[in-house]
Image 1 (cartoon, rainbow, N blue to C red):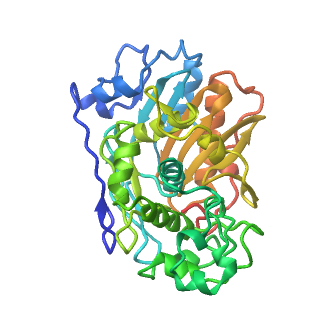
Image 2: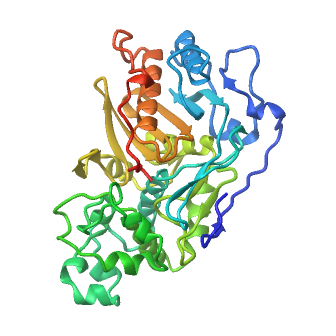
Image 3: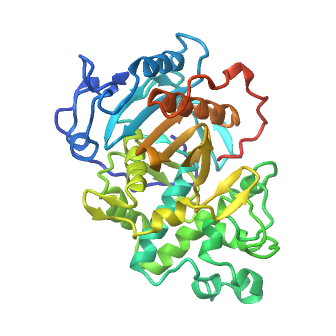
Length: 410
């Protein structure tokens, strides 16, 4: 795990019964003869169903898993877990060995090598990178329900005492909507420039962000990892209580999260853009929460309509349509939305198919490799449920374009 200025906060633990060494089992197919041992939380929060009842072609799934294990071609690189939720139940859960590398932000946005034969399992939190941004948007919805915040609230209203807000009416007019949709107007380039590197050299992210030139909110889109951190600052100001404890109470505990790790900004507030570790099962619970329009176990955890707000097109970018820290994707005519993180971390939600796919990979700073791998896996799963034709196979890894030196999905 990384060291440096960031502290670990909000580690949630859940009591289990009937845990067994089989928790690290390589494949869960409910109607197979050998079944993964059930834990209390899995039974309670993630009901299981046979692959046949969910309409899966098991031969196609087995072919995919053999490819992921590199036992047949085309192979995959550093796929750590794959979970599939379909028609109300978990129907596939797969883990295998791989690296446990991570990105060290305080030391130059650099890759830190961990164990290369780490045993990934159901109970092991995985670094989720920018999937954290989607969690920030989710928390923003809960905060809007509980406070006077609205998506139209401006920095003039939320940070009236800040010198930059008092001095610059353009920055004062930035709304929460524009912060959540990456349309705040700041001159910022963290995909091909050094904006993120410079951000992590600062002790106060908000001050640094507000010092940057601004061409006018709502006029352009720019991927900016300082914005989710500002959003969390604004939420905590409105709540008037520690954000990490509030998030645990109103989101993580409600979904029955197991162990997780959430590191901080230099000022001690949880980091809103990255630096979160979640178990893949808990990533799946978030996906199911979105699939169910914010409902969980009969409770409306998110405000009615907030999932639609987060996952509809709020902006168009060079990398695709964008919502509130969610990407809007399409494959073979099937629309879905994703929370995506560097290295290949995905929560992909397919509303029309009643399906959620969770994927973790260890391909940090290797875009577009991990993106292409995710798209291949998703397409293979769509084929396994008969949603797409087998006559148009996914591309081989060997056909992928050269990857750039810098990863635009931190």
